[in-house]
Length: 283
Image (cartoon, rainbow, N blue to C red; front, side, top):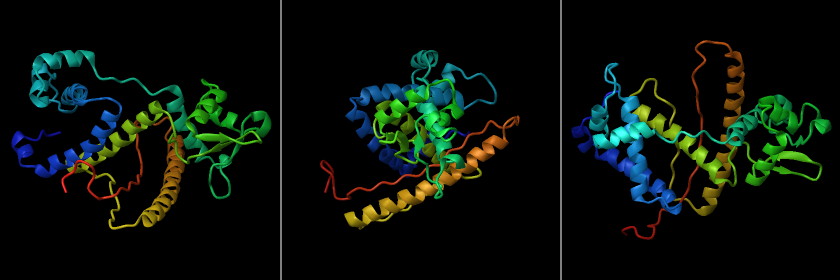
């Protein structure tokens, strides 16, 4: 990867404006949880050092602290300390990582879908529904965690509901918890990180370019925005389920291949807001 020069950065105001724009919602999120500018800078400093060391190799030579300092702009003494400490790389909780796999299978395996290819409401126990039960669904992904533990956590998060007939219903057709900071934070980093990585790849003329498109329209009433929100959700769920089904089939076919080391992500989003000047903005 070629490193942009300082002159390139100075003469790229459009890039800097884009970065400012993406930082606004991030700043709002961080300050809501009490993370101020000083704490953010300390966190960002570690990321700059890590990226300089990992993503900018010097023709196979060892990456020295001096080179990392030059690339990142972080003082050499700080570079040494940060490289020794390393970034926070704690994996998500077992229930979070397992949950994504379970929902993926629930939305893709024909045994767990109705005639419209929507996730069925599943009997909670195998003694009630046999192989087509929530218990068997969880066990088909992992036998290391009890299905009851997954169910209890999902009920807490609002991912599923349990009806009077002891059947488990998926509330969302993708694993997007209604509650739970740890779970939502995990998907914030995962989804936005991959989206930003795709745009970075395209901005640096990576080949082939990744799919990264959106539809934009303004001058809409609240009623029109709500119609578009509902339509977007319906179409997005159908698209994601189709990609999910194909991905699981290909994953199964690729088992045992020496080159089966790639990962992919396909995501969609919808956002709407009032474009009138917000408090504190110039009019």
